[in-house]
Structure formats: C-alpha cells, structure tokens
Length: 252
Ligand code: PXP
Image (cartoon, rainbow, N blue to C red; front, side):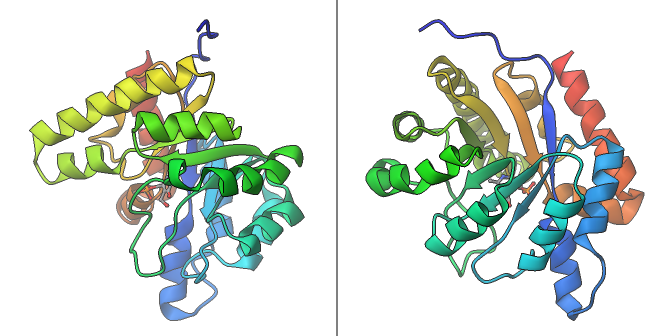
C-alpha cells in the first residue's frame, strides 16, 4: 500500500505522572505536576502526557482540569477504556487520548491492549472520542494482530509498548533487547504501511532512546519516569533538553 513518508521531526511527549506520585506520597500540594508540565513546555516538550488512573494514585481530576486550562502544547490524556474515563475525556476533549490497559494491582502499564479480543467494544468505545476531535491512540505490544485490530477499529495512532526492549536492556540482557528492538522496528514499519501514525513509549532512558528514535516511521515518543527521576539530579529542564538532543541526534 502506498503511504506518505512520515514527517522527519520526532515529537517528544513528556509524561508528568510521577511528579504527582511524589506529591501524593505525602498528601501535600507539592511538587505540582502542572508546574512541571509548564517547565517541560519551556524545555521543548511537544506535548504533555498524563494518565488519570482509576485509583487516582498519581494524577488527579483537578490536575487534568488545570492542565487543560494552562497548557500551550497538546495534552495527551492516557486513559483506560472505561465509561468513567470516556465521560471525563468527552468533557475535556483533549487533543489526544491514548487508550491503555489498566490493572489496579500493577505498578505501571505492564502490557499493551488486547484489542483483538475486545474489538467490538473498543470500536464503540473510541468512536465518540474520535468524533469529538480527539486523536485516538491505542497502546499495543509490537504485535501484528493487535496493530491490525487497531487499524480495523478506526484508531488513528498506535503507540508501541517499548517496555520489553528497554527493560531487557536495563537488565543487561542485550540479546533479548536486540530481538525486542527488531520487533519494534518491524511493527513500526508495518503500522505505517497501514496508514497508522506510530508512537512509542514506556521505559525509555538516555541509553535506550536513540535506536527507536532513529526509526523513520516513529513520530512521537512519550517519556516520563526516567525524566522525572533524572530531574532530581540535573533538573527537569536539563533532563528534557538532553533527551531532545539524543532524539535529534538519532534522527539526523
Ligand atoms: N506511554 C504509555 C502509554 C504509558 O502508559 C507510559 C507509562 O505511563 C509511558 C508512555 C511512559 O513510560 P515511562 O514513564 O516509563 O517513560
């Protein structure tokens, strides 16, 4: 299938969830994730990502309201496919929504969506969001069947779960990491040939970002935990600028 070449510039979405995790650890008003979002904007973030979880363990409803009010860059609202989250998304109509699986007991989003198994429900779930003008992204493993299902239900974007690649690299399992990287490469290309916009996220660090940033089909990376952790040592501005520099270098 003929597809247009993807734009050369790679966007960086900064996920600010874990600023809220630190705030909530003490039940205080600080550090404020909205302040972090504005700093991220000033440091060159192309978008801000926030995941309102069912248990509100980090981002709160009022954080989302304030982000909608103050952001100058697009908000990517991460959400589980539940009626509650759909209603909140329809109220705010953010630039983008990213549909993710959510299990209450998990530490983070552990895997991609099983769209193939829940295709009918998810097709009906995303239709009003898309009709309301939100760019709909589905968070999936680098798996051909899931990508095909995302395409069939009418999503505009797939975000490829990079966790298996990043985690195996961080654990020193370089062979497995190389295998996972190849899967990401193949599936980025496959998704692009279907006409889907391709994003990637989960687990990126300065050490793992460049190989994926170099894939020409990938148009956006969403990065959070590492940047917020690195900010403790060098500040958020410097952490984001370094990530941006590495992404640009990989893309050059
Ligand atoms: N993209 C999605 C869909 C996610 O669920 C997450 C984690 O919340 C990220 C990107 C960011 O992952 P990390 O915080 O590991 O950079």
